[in-house]
Image (cartoon, rainbow, N blue to C red):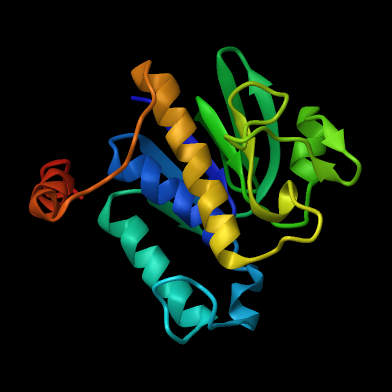
Length: 195
């Protein structure tokens, strides 16, 4: 099964993990809970009238858990390196293999730099799908945006990364678009996968 490792548990990282896991990819999120979302109150996120950032983060985590992504809460990634056909993600505790890596570490661009990703000034150079110059490595949110640090933009970047991964895996443009009559079957599929 395709393995997507997401480094970072803010809106971008959790969105990437949600879209990947919901659509049948094995997704693991490394979340040190250092997201700036804890310092916010959302008044400008579409669909959210007014909500504390920490409460919103808990909702995102619940969605990720519902669709079976593995959250490695509190386990910090110390290195990401290319290895064979994929990547090795190293933490203080262990090493993990990945086919794809989504970097969602906010303004901390150290992992992208160590992987050899191209930069445009101070930010990681990404295309519209959030893919970097290193094939199968994506940089989301503040990593690729100098001053556009906003929760809904970051969440969209994470979704774009996951949808591009799904498109690569499926060999065609992939769309995650649910209709009301599909909702029950989406949840049943998650239950059938043992989530």
